[in-house]
Image: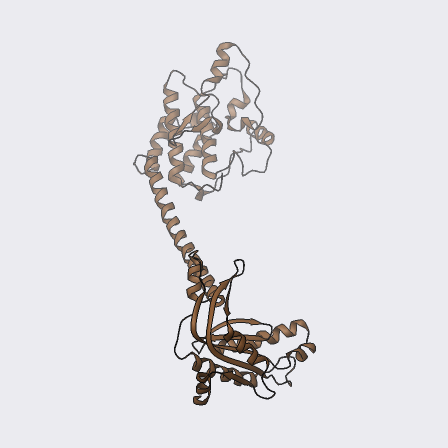
Length: 402
């Protein structure tokens, strides 16, 4: 139970309940507990400590029965004089012996450990040393484990001489001083603890919420790179994305001239590095234009203007972007083949098309229509040394103006 944090006020409340119970017991006809230990101190549903098993030694004596033999571990709470059991020592115990047992329980509460837990000795060795001092053996408790007055009370309770031990009336008065005269109210203590836990929980929730927001933004950024933001927003809401027709868009297709030959002189990793370097450069370039990158398949690069947001200058944007990418490819150097020039084949076309999301496991935003097919054919059938081929009056005007 060490992971449960109990502050000193909480522990003092439990010890105070024990002191009050023993003070009442010693003033009652029972007079003596006789076998006080932490094992017969219980906490009820209202977090009040209560004492059990009192008067059992007297019961055995009254019935003429022999009490069960205790193990060495069970005797760790027993006073030295009771362990020695000199002739004439009461079988039901003494009040001073109960005070000694309370001192051992107090050590358990202060250090959150079993009796004599700080000593690397077996219970049998400890009992032998307690019976036959010197040296006097007692638990070792550091000064910072509890208030100094509490440690003084504890040490006086396990004094070797029974006459030197305080009674529970005195201990009760000294416990009041420990709490500066205030009544130890466990309910108030619980409210204070709950307030601390609530504040800590609020801070923890705030930190976790901030972390969640950061991760959510990362996820949204990644999703928006894969799909148009308007489409991604509908998918996040669980809404269906209906196919949409566009009256006029401009499609861009490109691939690398002689890519098959270049790939034949590269390892698979080098091919991946080549395409990654080139498309990273292209992606940075197209960010300056109002266009949408549709996909890359092998060395093919597809971009569209005029969707998913309709714009009137889509042809101009795509045509200017095509010239920019053509310029970038001319300056591009292949890492492992720096002497090999990289040339692009580009095809452009303007016309109507239909766009929609295809698939559920890995949804893709795809374009369909003759415009897409025509632009693809323009790219694949471009003449030698003619890097750009296009159809449509709007594209022709855009290239001439550029």
